[in-house]
Length: 103
Image (cartoon, rainbow, N blue to C red):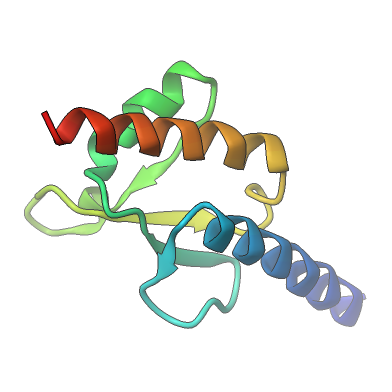
């Protein structure tokens, strides 16, 4: 059973990594385990609010600091981010945020 769970997680992680990289993200560390750190190159506090408007709850990097501070890092759950629809919304919201920051 444990081997099957590990295999399913590895497949989910691989799909999420492909989607994240196609969306223009880099990983802050080698993807492993259930969670990964994605560098979005935008303020993830703002991104998380925009994604919440779309029905997606994300964990912006600032939540993981002892002293909250803006961050471009976002923690993703590989099991919950394999859906291409999520990444289409994510890409659109990131592009909007990048466009609005150029002023």
